[in-house]
Image (tube, rainbow, N blue to C red; front, side, top):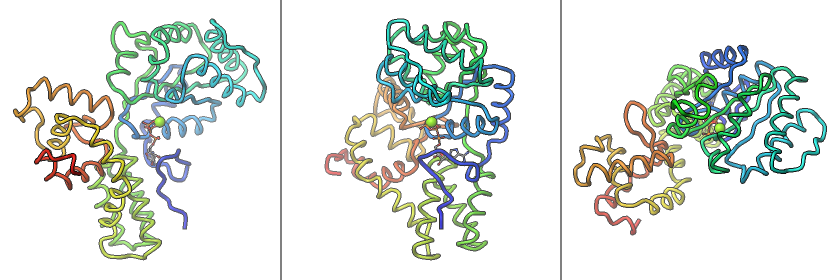
Length: 339
Ligand SMILES: Nc1ncnc2c1ncn2[C@@H]1O[C@H](COP(=O)(O)OP(=O)(O)OP(=O)(O)O)[C@@H](O)[C@H]1O
Ligand SMILES: [Mg+2]
């Protein structure tokens, strides 16, 4: 039986959940020839959503992940090779000083031939690491284009704001901004309980779904990860008692080495902040460290994606939270090296 819960790769039609409002927003934005900026914490579903929207609209597009680009020459050659795939022919551009402008004008030419041609940049928050002037250069080029549509996605709220929303930002109001939240509880719950119905029956599928969503707090990626692990146990071992608890254990255990490696890389303040968040206490009320030290730790942990802020601070990974809680006694003793 094929596992209906997909994680870590893009989602096909049949497994895509919810996002009606967001799909409509993207459609309207692209139809009115506006560019689009999508911001969300890591793994909330930016790529899946944008791909789904572009496919539904039958738009030709290329997607570049800036995290996989090492310098400007590499950016140029990646754009070229993707453009070649769309057009089915070879563009013999050499990488020289002004080939950045050249490659973008090539995109504009393609858009003339293929209306609606869209360029998607993933992880746009890292763009400035390529060259300190690159954001300015690209924004100048894009502002002079009328045919090509751009979608940029990023997961660093602060960096993305600095590029798109501050008054002097290079891309100030270049397009519509979509801040992507989690998928709604109702939509996730309907999808999950429906899928479990055939393997677990009405009552158990409801219980499993409730437990999964309680654990992952509706985080799209971790919800699919846990649901996939529950599914696997059900298929391999049948409907056993505490199947969800078992899957949670397995999910934490799969990451044990990884979590340990991450944990030892943190300093004492980072660890204290994470521990406080895991216990659902207010971080700034803990006076055992100066507020400024706590503040820098929070900033650093948010930048690195370990914590996110919704209504309150949370760990990005609910299984890392459970792992930390499990090792709490060691942390309080500050005897972390013995982990
Ligand atoms: N609409 C959806 N339907 C079903 N699963 C989803 C959906 N959105 C996200 N997911 C789950 O979350 C995972 C991550 O989604 P995706 O890669 O699209 O997120 P992202 O925000 O682009 O991530 P990153 O920050 O790593 O770029 C998917 O593999 C899937 O498991
Ligand atoms: Mg992505």
